[in-house]
Length: 416
Length: 222
Image (cartoon, rainbow over all chains, first blue to last red; front, side, top):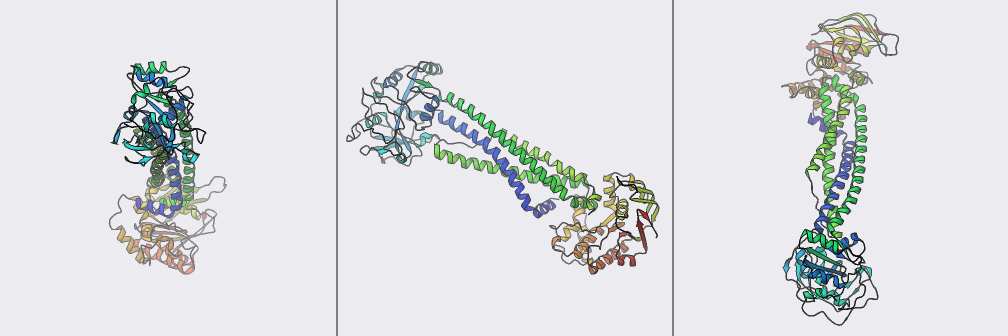
């Protein structure tokens, strides 16, 4: 019987192949929507896991999270230096690390910070920490090795940034891989950033993360970076401002208290997890819409295929009826048509699962390349259940043409 | 070999005043060979459908050795036909993608979980007998005469007690038609099968001992 089904499918392979392809594409669509949404959720949650509490200047909460956690370039207003100093001394704070950006090396953002952030990101896989102002630690996916030298650009090079020609950092260490945008970041002492951009204690100019080719002049362009890192510099109330501060609260209670205290007219404190949850809510709605569209597409494809299979049964009723006339039991013909329809459906669904997963992996790696957020493609038990449900529905749908074949009168089929 | 006995058979189709077939008494002795002729639309196909159980509609008795096909369910008629009847149709109803041998074996393959022992050898012998030397050739590449000879082999494989053919030579050229007609008669006779052929082919009219003419649903002369 299998031999017969294969021979039969072979004689109409073009049509059968097209059917399988259509089913596969419809299935793949659903798979990609489900898997990709999950990957985005897992990936961004993982990226935010080191960021308990972020404090910035008043503005968009979402932008603060995107810029600090995901290093998305944006014009963030600066916090006064006194905020970082206060937080550094606060007993409810385990550590407070500044996040100061504005410069790039290639496409890698250069982030001014302190050793606390290095620890928060998981520590070093290679080399040593920041001891001097001209030292830098690179993320796992930055194409630089300890010993290399880099000149920072103010702003993106493709957006008309200019090079701080006289400033050079020496790479001394490499961060462990985090699967976050920080894998592409370069960490330097915050004091070095202040120095390059002419922030000296006591005077501040509004500095933003994303201003390019401006009239901005370097503090002392001829003066190279030198001297040891002074981690206490951030504790000075007259220190220059920073766009964002990452805080590790001492306890959960402290976290809520700090968030409360720093939601003021001149500071904004957010739990990135909370902001992301809100984003997921929106994302979830979008996913439901997409999933509904995908399900609708699948239902349409299913109906179209049933129609095609039915038309085929009608067209082949002579063959089917003749087989009965020549002695094949109708139950066998029922099984035959059912099996053949189900084989096509099953092949389509399985191919679609494969294509969908493959497309998700490709999509994830493209997105990871662009954003630095690694998007894990994962399958859960629910997926298996949904796949089984789809196959079950297919098995049921295949009963329709099978039943039609069963009812085919051999006498009518033979009448020409 | 089964004998056919028909009493008071009346088959009507919806929308027609006259019955498509009305036979008060019609008998065929076991092993007899007869040819059924008559103008098209006169009821030949209805007659063949009734005696093969392809169509179970109608009133009366169509009995082969006492088994009345009119009272049987579709499944029972299918099973009875599979056991007793070999069919040859005007159009060959072969699967072009399957080989000659596979086409001959297909109904048996579908009817049995395992092909009964010796059936394959029987099929090969039968194909040799009908003059098809390449049993593994695809049926779609055969000439029409070869196709019908394949169909004859398929009909006779299980050594049926009843062989029924509906215009088996009508779509063939005269030479191929004569070859098929001769094969059908020559292979049915040694089986002792009751042979019923609906045809106008002079070969059948000349070789078969009994001619039945059906006009307007009724049997004319014998």
